[in-house]
Image 1: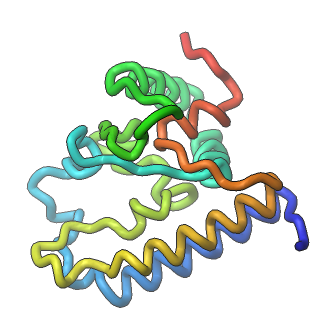
Image 2: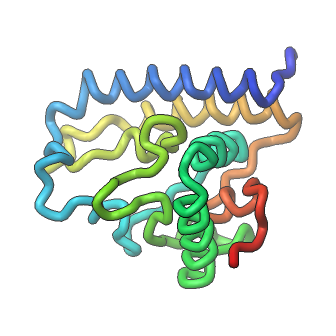
Image 3: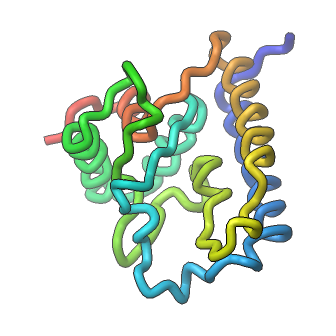
Length: 180
């Protein structure tokens, strides 16, 4: 098994995500409502009863890199929102983490997803506002993509991938643990 450096794994992750996004866009998104014309922009990302995105360490590192390209002020706001989200929704890495929901700390009203181009997680890439269940991308498509992401993660960190809620995963990899 050939191991990967984190830098090379991030490049491969970006390519995988670009291909996955293209497949979703080409084969499914044309059946969904356009986010640009949404009456409630960001409602799906900020719906604390809906959002339950889990990611690997590698995806969290990709998010960290995307956030690092933003202004210091935006970075501080994001890290504060991550901390607030963890506290507000009582998120942890223990127990039934897949049953916990939260509002995404990476969505900013008026701007949108702050990591849309460089760090958007797989479930978010697959998500769109579909009116009919039969128009949704099949669950197997996301599962297949996540299996590829998991393999990249394992080749990089040499341990089985741990799937954590997005805020917990971001907190684990952020360079600054505490935000003023």
